Length: 340
Figure 1: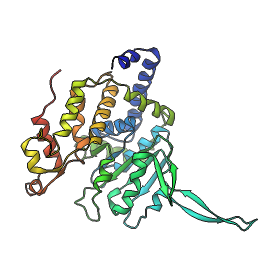
Figure 2: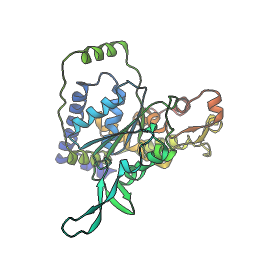
Figure 3: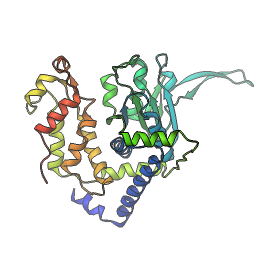
Figure 4: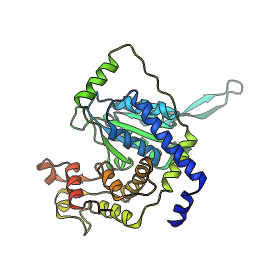
């Protein structure tokens, strides 16, 4: 860790850190031209971007989920594609497919791969839970390995690759729950709630006139890859890392350290991937807040969005109408972040 700390003092790294913070502030300023409120959501989407993770945004229809993602893509200066998920969508509509092409001069036919919308930097998977799990799973390989296999041939997806998926609450008509393997690929499950009265007034006044807002790109693909590398260089004390590990392990009912209520209400807890994501996200949060080390508060603040879609409750919790958020809130009260 001392080597990393020493290297952070170098002039080149200081310049990179300043640029990181400058770009982050400019992205927020540009998005604020269009999106009102939702500070926590915007912070989590930015953290996912700087970590190199993916973000699932859950909210009721009409809460500007799609508008937020589209605006974010415009500010990043990246290649953007959108997939509207519907019940009849097929996996090849996402990955692309091979077609037979005939050479008009020789008469020979050959297979040619036509890339699907997954070959982009920012992929908006709009209303992802309105298509069956068979089609949802077409994203699994791409989200984890930056590749896509069609008819036995593997095609690489050029980084950065960032899936921003929106979903409606599963209680709504015509939705399919996302498979656990799919959910685990997402760094965050971010909840987008209704706005306050003042913010809703601002939205109405902004969107019911002839005024058109233009959002300018503020960065590029190479710079974002550099920022993702920078985030991984942020030091974290062993005690803070231990707190992150213990917090995730405490969500597993089979772990001896888990509180009694976890055993009562939880079927499955967070995976090792959850621990990795929690530490990386805490690093990005620290850097975005002009700190060069991770604190306990960074870990505790991000525990719920990292874990809420990974903690699967059982029928006892459902019968008492307890959600994974309720369980995590109780866990954070039982295991508060140490002081200092």
